[in-house]
Amino acid sequence: MWKKVAKYALPLLICLAIIIAVIPGCTKEAEKTEIVIGMSRPLSGWNATIGDSAFKPIYDKFKQIVDAEGGLTVAGYDKKLPIRYLIYDDKSDMQTMTRNTEKLILEDKVDFLWPASGTAFLFAQVPLANKYNYLLVTAEGGATSLEGMLPSMPYIFVPLSFADWYEVPTLADMMVEKGAKTAYIMYIQDLHGIEYNGVAGIEFAKRGIEIKGVKSVPADIKDLSPVIKDAMASGADAFLAFAYPDQLMPAVGQSMALGYNPKLWLGGPGVNFGFFHDAFGPQVEGICGWTTFARKSSPALKEFADMLYAGLPEAANDWWGHPLYWGAYQFWKQAVAEVGLDQTKLKDKFLTGHYNTILGDTYFTNGLMDKESHPGEVGQWQNGIYEVVGPTAKQTAPLIYPKPNWLPAAK
Image (tube, rainbow, N blue to C red; front, side, top):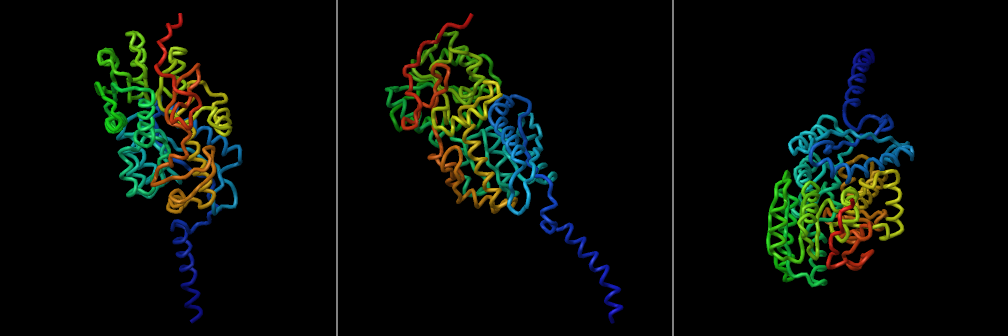
């Protein structure tokens, strides 16, 4: 009988070893040599300007710091692991981005998925991440249209402030406080512009602010002089451009050329970037946009800005999203150290956890970074510095209203 047992024992042991080797989770965790983070990003195309200035400095600096620390601490491993980014260019094309995302998840089987760039792109990406149970902490993109869907997408977490998540309501309150009674709105024909225009219509109506005109513009528009002339004719107190840099830059230039100087000129995203100030210099004085912080917001945020922007051109500065992305990924880093690679456990940590970051006590409420973690919402260029002017309780400088006259162009 023992000869028969011996005859079959060795083949059975070999089969068992093969089965263990191919079943996920049955190999020794210590054999893992790196953490692979996958991204589909606009490395080229119209969206590259925002991608390069918004989330890219964050993930570049994040890796530098992790490398300097000897790797990422991951629960379940007895040593730190280096991180490697696997980044595909979506060429600023939505379908390419979704194909890249599925490839990263299904073929490359990356350990973690990090976000695409832009509100509309995230709207297309988050259902995929949630479908495959991959935690996704978003970056440059809002969530007005996503907010109602987040309860059914528990793997999605949004750090950035957006239209009705403190921004437009704060702006509307500031306008009332300063006596602005009318507004003219220009918005880009995509999800970002549609969301902001819709929320403005609701919030302004609540406060008795009359919208004197609304114009939607395509992404590739170059001549905005008809829109600027229409806004001038409306006599509105405020001109609000809910658009991207490709539309904002000509809108500002043509406002200057036509002598259009409303009491409030706000645009974004775009006004918040260093390249905006580089392009126009002192002429941007008094222009408003979205923000979350200034160096004067707190010692921690000053230290963060000094660290992140050291060695970077001024054009890479983003005074809106950078601290929120950094705080969110500080949160992510601490959660990974506690729960490891398990996406479900990581999701649960984001749903319930609190961590101390550069924002102070940082946490998420119903998938959104809680408003209390935001250091600001509305900014204004003043003497070469992008100050937080709203909400009032978080100001680093009071709002200048009416906006100063345009300065003469430098010769």
